[in-house]
Length: 130
Image (tube, rainbow, N blue to C red):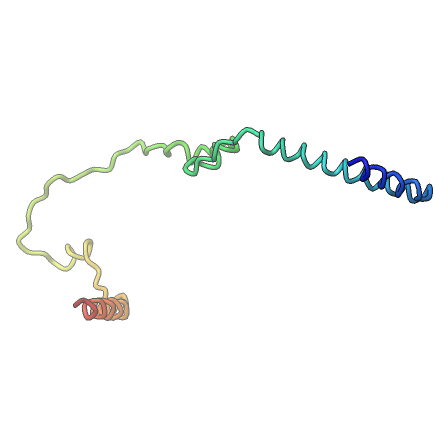
């Protein structure tokens, strides 16, 4: 061990002043780097764990955003209640004028194309069922 130290001393004494200065600067830089690295690693290892964020929590609760009144409260109900007919007299016959209120012929409106498309979709679906 003593021989190794003497060899290093002899080598260091043979260096010029500029080489000695560079050598000391390099050793100091390596020491500071290792010291900083060890401090950072100890801080990371000793850091308290953060609780994981709850996935179901709404974003506005996380950021304390105000809730618009339209989303929080239901709109006001109308002041009138429409009349409800619980029962009506049964008619034995209906005229076209009576039925016109409740019926619109889809063929007159031009909905034949929709009917054909719907029936074709239903047929395809039923053909696929085993």
